[in-house]
Image (tube, rainbow, N blue to C red; front, side, top):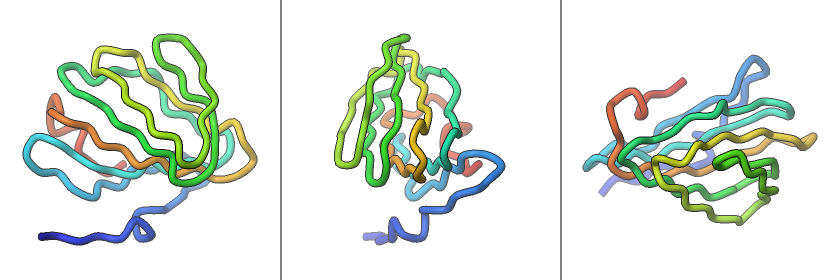
Length: 113
């Protein structure tokens, strides 16, 4: 068993969003994405993967395949790996997203940034 605290992974940067990897095991990775107001995650895909996202703090705009959806605390979202995925913190408060990416395509997806 391995235990970690989400509090330690909530880390914001004025210059860009942050990604803090919590676990990278068995072909899956779990991480937090942290956004200051106005910061964005560019459009991308996760080929061959499944993405599960839980909004743990804040609210913003999720864009999947060009369709924009408002998301807020406690929302849980599933997206298939071939869906185009983007996020924007459109609020005036920080946002933290808990992400589980199953069957990661390569190790690049499991790195802190």
